[in-house]
View 1 (tube, rainbow, N blue to C red):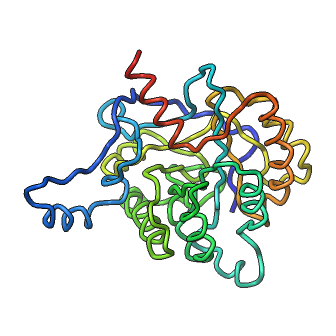
View 2: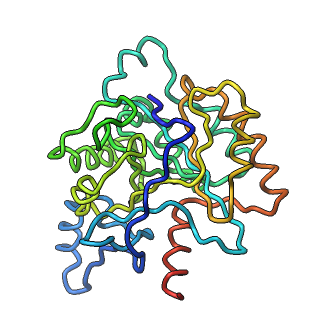
Length: 287
């Protein structure tokens, strides 16, 4: 289920980002450390760059990288499938988009795929192939794709006491599918969050990733219009939100084939979200 509309309001960024959260063992008791680490959430023990907690320890929110002369841009793709859409998939609806992934490979474009756990269960071979391809990184889009706030584009709502388990269940689904190293990043379904949800997820050790460019590919039928929307709005450090769901975003592949060469002509370089987060942390440390 695609939940983004063309005019989602940008959520406010919270807090400063100074250091990555990492889990490290000690030489004196490596076996005990390994046993303890095995029981930690994926995000908490990840060595990948994350942002420091925001005010009052809230989950940090990332929207874009530094607006510097290094003209980088991150294309992100939401692989959406809600927990109750199994019957629709069984009836033949396609929530995947292999042609899009093939196009990104052919164009040699790094990308971050925000995947729901239910999507990974439905398409384990594709999840595994994406997760093992060094061109891509897999991040968490919840298990159920239910909203973490009320009134979020008609999505069902996750109860507060199940928010953390919904995130953990997605990481478990990635591991079961064979994704070896999911990133410690979380995108709220529909992009909807509030202070309560940020507080609830704070112990998960994730960085919440939003965007500053909405492609408008959800339910679009005009690939050129989607491409124009992105090309008109991209700035250095931008995070572009698109979709990897064939049935509800059917023109995304064609739009990407128009977007990529044009941005390269303008001097942009494609990176993953982890690259932008790492650059942001380094930039803030210097300043």
